[in-house]
Amino acid sequence: MSKVTVNEIFLYIPNLIGYFRIIAAVLSFLCMKNHQLLTLIFYGISGFLDAFDGYAARKYNQGTRFGAVLDMVTDRCATSSLIVYLGTLYPKYTFFWQLLVSLDLASHYMHMYAMLSSGSTSHKNVDSTQSRILSLYYTNRTVLFFVCLANEVFYVAIYLHYYNWFWLGTFMVYLNAPIWLFKQYTNVVQLKSASLILARMDAEDKSKSKST
Image 1 (spheres, one colour):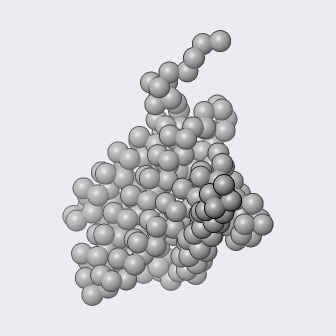
Image 2 (cartoon, rainbow, N blue to C red):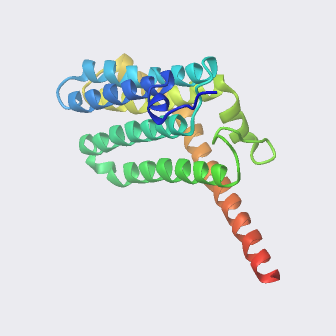
């Protein structure tokens, strides 16, 4: 039986999709100041392909730790970068943007670290006993896709609203706001759940060390 090399892992189909997502996201960053339509296209491509890397990983049995982290990091960096730009468009709400970036990064990082530290092979393997909301969010692919989509559309719509786009801007802000709020609530629940998992593991370790 031949061994799988590191280079083969890097060239797995879902990971190739991940690299393309990064390129599309970076192109959208370059266009944000002067080219709203191109920003919409490139950012949309990066976000839309998020649904296909997971599908490719399952279809071709190419799920990897590297791919899972690459996917999450790409998501977080793209969203955070867009929010950073919103901070330049709406400087009055800088503190609000800072809170959103901090919540997004902290909740996802702590969740992934907690799940992997507890022996889970994926941050998406959330049991309903841990959190019903997180279980629904991560295990139901339809819910995960539409909540993440609405969250990204909300931020893009705020961006387009600044440039006086109505249907894809102002209208979409109000349309996606309720799901965006749900996503922020999910982030808070995720942060709390991850904190409890890590604290329980620490408590168990400290209890064992005291008993020896």
